[in-house]
Length: 225
Length: 255
Image 1: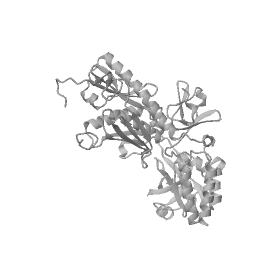
Image 2: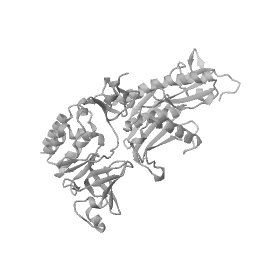
Image 3: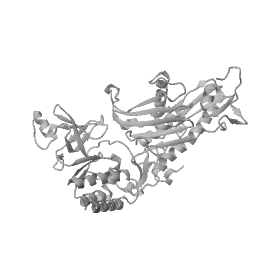
Image 4: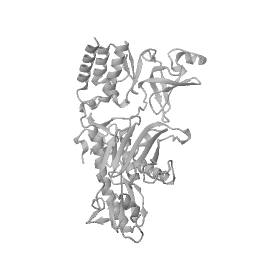
């Protein structure tokens, strides 16, 4: 009962008879590899793995994400990172030293920021940092939300999709691993960018998407001028 | 209402009252992703049963004291709409729905990898819109598909189906009249591998009859599993293989 005939698999589908081939999204039982997820199976460096089609963002150290400040408590900002777990940004993780009573001067409740996950412990306490010059508060622009499982598609092979969007739309775009996307540019460019991103999310599983998006942008831009 | 002494025959010309053979399921229809706000959802019809399942999560646990430090908890709420049965059902949880919720949760929990999401909760809501015997099995089937749709890691799907005894004969998937007036009802739930996660019995059966009922229900579950799987696979049948080869993308490149 080899279910690799098609690429889409459901939990419990047999993927391989070789337990060494177990990759992400799989489990081994009785020396055989089965799928853990509803998603797409693929072979990658002699491992078989399953990419989910849906799911929540689970923070892992090193991820860069877009967070929204939810609360300020004793020397920490509590940050929503679009995940079942909230992030903690300590006052000492800002690039410059600030006083505790000045915290809301920098990041208020509702502020958006580009943040890196510094550490996640076994109890899922998520420590965040902003101590990098590529991170920081997002004062301008807009934020869109897509399913975190579609983030690789939005970026494309070697960044092909995202670089095309940046170039065609004259926008700064930052894709957070948690599925939040920050876009900054001229108003109508941003409108088009957000619309395009939602199309990519909806059609993430279809073929020739980069070319179709290219055509879509060309038509939209012609209509505008 | 049929009088006590009036003998009702459940078979006519060798088939059941709705024209099924004794080992035949009622027609099944499944739709995935029917609710926009839920993380995963499924609408299912099993004969005249109509249920809808919604899955939320993993998400933060409220109230907090229910939280488990090492794993996710699973909550399952089975609810019958007041209009789902002929005589208006008084809305809200009652003894029966609490029991069905509990056994259904226990039918699904063994396959969910709760250890992947400590301190969180997976909420499953099953609403019965129309009831015609076997709503718990329909609810479990729908919930299992909705869990997969929500992207929750599971060892396998769960399929569920009942067998009953009418006129001294073991039949698959009893409908309302067979359930109400029959001699026994045995709902089961199982993994495609044959591990049983739910087994209940209402009525009286001999040891041998129970064994035959379970075997028949297992065969029914296998048929249901194929339908559940097909619906999920067909939803994305025109997939692009190449996106899989992209290694975990390097999000967060410079802006």
